Image (cartoon, rainbow, N blue to C red):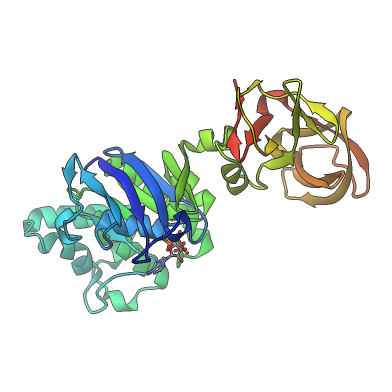
Length: 356
Ligand SMILES: Nc1ncnc2c1ncn2[C@@H]1O[C@H](COP(=O)(O)OP(=O)(O)OP(=O)(O)O)[C@@H](O)[C@H]1O
């Protein structure tokens, strides 16, 4: 296990990058603490795989250094970095048994037979493949093949980091939640440093203690799932996390207050001093309610999603979502929307600009 430091990293796939847009990773400075469970979350193309490949040593960054426990490993090969990686698709030896597949990474490093047996049994039990140990890997279902692939990544307890790159892509939806919670349980038991790469917020939020959110080659926020939900540092995080995502409404700042469609909307706290730029109000649909007073809005869509309804309503040209627990309005109704003040945030050029 190790603390991993990424220092002043930049990466461009172009041999001659001319502008910031030529960089797949724009500037990354980050510590992954020893024993942490991290998710690297972001949309397709934001640079997750590039970052992962730089940590694993498959890719040399254009600029910057990678340190494991303070030791510079930038010029070391993937093998010398002593890491384990689980990919989207199973990487297993089809002709070997399940047992031998799990034992392979340990045998390869000369671990003694008793210890190998103990680890193989432990990991197989955890992943619920203990009954399959004698079977040939080629005959396994796709789910079990991927479980085996994960097992191979987890079987060594002395790796610096285990990295998972969208590992549940091939897993049946009904098994996904089970494996996600298994991985979490496993992390709590083994306390290896783990980095889980995904574009799926549910996977990231269930697995990780800390979620690193990326967009366009940059880290936009690092936080616990609760922090990302409650105070998104950027409107991108507000949109990307949550279902539906945060409402972002254009606003004007006057007399130290925020005005949307001519209405004053009380913010959570003060407007940060000295801001200038495009200003927006951010409020999650969970904190918009229908009341006797508030912004007049026309309901344009109502979706019953079980425990609550999601309504969409127009205020002028702006569409808002609200999560409504009871007394759901009908499409076409004119309602009054109220915002919970301590959840009403201000953003300037995308970044959080209200203070509490
Ligand atoms: N080998 C390559 N050559 C040139 N450009 C690349 C290469 N690999 C990735 N890119 C570009 O770098 C940027 C980041 O890609 P990357 O694959 O790291 O993103 P990602 O978040 O992992 O996306 P995905 O989830 O789709 O894999 C993208 O603009 C992509 O087109």
